[in-house]
Length: 61
Image (cartoon, rainbow, N blue to C red; front, side, top):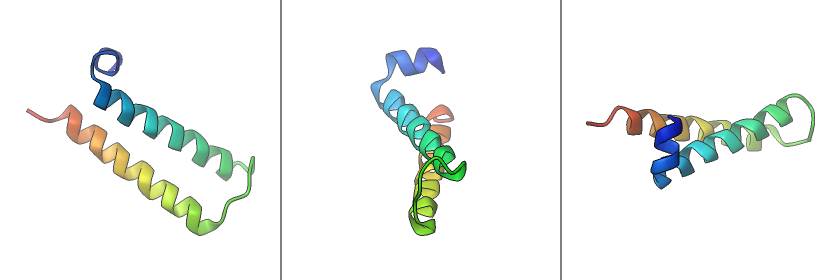
């Protein structure tokens, strides 16, 4: 995945978006910041959508 991230800008953007979203979610879940339940749920849905896109990208022919 490191090679793909370094050579494919679309994959790199997906990977970075997932990583950023995941870090933010963890921060909110650990109490490092305050966010509404609805906003946190939206972030989790976006993280899942991005994860699905990464999976599809890795398994395309």
